[in-house]
Image (cartoon, one colour):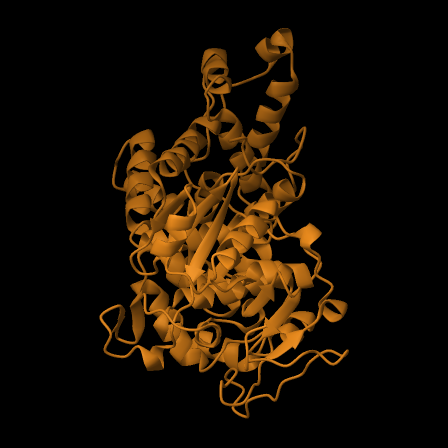
Length: 466
């Protein structure tokens, strides 16, 4: 137990005084406590061997070391952590000297990654609070945003600089205790997400924390405390100041971890979605119950279902769905100007992707997949001869494009007949295929209905195999 910083548990759930302004936890109010094993119920059997080895090595070398963050939170909730992070008094260079399979990463936040078999344990040195690092070149801010934070401090200082109380819990593997400085233990138990300190200040320090708030709430079913959520409404535009590559990482975590639909609804509720996908957001705001919103919702539901069943997913398919309405509008505008049909689709796809990656980047392998899915849509609804159909069936992106066509039909677009035809031809033998009529061209003008009947299909997928 850190000397002089905590009290032992009393056999009941610990409580902390709450700040009167409901904007977060104030370090001058809450007192740190220690929760014993009889209360928290965490077992070392639930912690990875790699994480325990890192903790033992650091403490044997005389450096304080603790499990911290989401891993501790998830263990308290009875969940299996995806990974384990360690906080320590040792500097990154010292950590590297203790582990042969260690590399240092990051400039904004210097971290050590220690490889233990197939597992990578992230080890961070205790950081000092911003009030103690003012003027230090290793702690830099631009317009309130932290752009460099490599001033090291104590365990207590590290706790108060973290983002949410439920993520600010430290597990001492030798004492088998949980150290709580901010009331995170009670908040985790009550499934409440609360920022540490002033919510507005913490979001200005790092606007991505707003996306993290949504992700934790959606993933864990937490309620976001009012002061923590109110500030998101006010500061959502700050998301646009973040590097597109960093926002892609956050979008991937939001939509590719099994809670995509819940996170999407929260992003819309707090005004964040339109800053990540501005053109799609504008379409949905203009017609909240329209095809764009329905298609996005069905694609997100399908992604969650595939993850729940252990099937592969890819962000390429989801981005194709989220950006479909903008590319559809652009392609129609190009065709209206006299551009050949297929060329119009290709140009529209390229332009929409180019605009979108100014906000949220997309790795090239996925952007190519998106454009192929889009490019096959007009070919799927303009069938010309058995040979063309056979070639499409052999196309490496056919299944993804077909699944996308099914989603379009389910979302209210007038393509259900085409979806049924492609379903039948996949089920038919060679003789049946030759007898099926093929020459069917899409109408020049797109006709829509709000709600469409689901097209018959062998299995609802909504995501192609990777």
